[in-house]
Image (cartoon, rainbow, N blue to C red; front, side, top):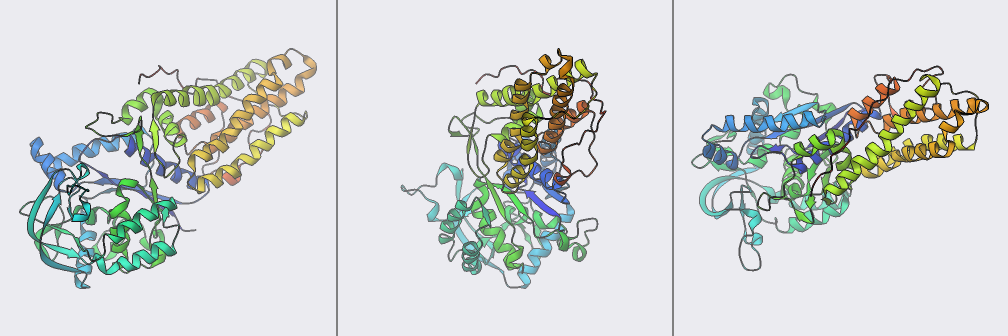
Length: 523
């Protein structure tokens, strides 16, 4: 089976990571872990976008070289991904020499194929977005909106990519491939944007007179590559594209890895970069339609209905949040409270509830009282016994059906619904305790067999839930299994789930609070 290749948008190293960066990486990491749980080999690529005019200006303002500036910023992203348990297989840094070789080879190929040409151009340039604007970007009053930042008028000569030659192809491709963009309603945004692209080509160079921090064009060293044309290429450069041709040993076998199963990106970079520039770049390079990767487009985390921004002072620092609710607490909240593709509103009350009521009160409490009762009444030794009744059968049915519904939701990128399906085991098991009342059974010697059965059913249910929630809260589920004293096989998959994971005579471990008590956060 072909490896599952998943990527995220690489993070622009001109600022610190925020909650949106964390959400995107956790989303991709959860899917990568889930695919491994299904038995698939996975290649998960993420990284940093280090070139561009904004970086050059920020470095100048800080009095350091661009290299020193991006290295210092990159460390912040790396530290956060380690803290949040992001388990990637490939790291893309656009200043990497292996990447430069591929970018220049692609530029040369497009140049040789007549896809690039040089012309003089006069127009308005957005320094924030690092792109030229047209009158179509003006508002009703004829002004360029604040989303473009500082806009200056430039008159210069640049190299252009024949984007307009491929617009008709892309329009038909989108219409004939409804799964190209997820969620599907985002495709309308792209089709509308394409109407503004008719007859327009893309400037893919910047003269060194105003920008030196970039990859030089191989056929004209007076220019460097436009940052998006460089950055988008990471999805194939670090996957082994042209590796033999340009001398990049040690990279994956591109023929086995491509096409990518999913590019996980934010809706703000869908148009034009990922849904227009990128597929057209691939098409111009000769990639067939069936090798155009799917775009998984996530929404934004807003704060009290407003988009996060530095100017409003409402940017959420994922480092601070994870320090308060643990990395797994943040991962759970991000995955449980947003439907992939849609916006969500962040608030501390809901964060506190997700951690205290659901994780600590639901899962953590179930584990704690199960092991405590087993240790108190049976010295932690499990004995399934022969007792059975309809209450036991109902719990076993929930445990058996949950993985099927869970996998269906997860494969459809409905992560929040997948968690809900898995959580049915936790809810049922907690009600099972309230119904069977083990502490009362323990007082009646004639109920010994039933008590054995109840304790086994609870521990076995926890073993199953530890597998289903492993992609979401991997540190907590590992600790849960340690307390169960159960280590699954190295490549344990969903298909290995069956009733009886814990054998007769299994010795449980010592109970420890799975989720520490949380100090209530202030709004």
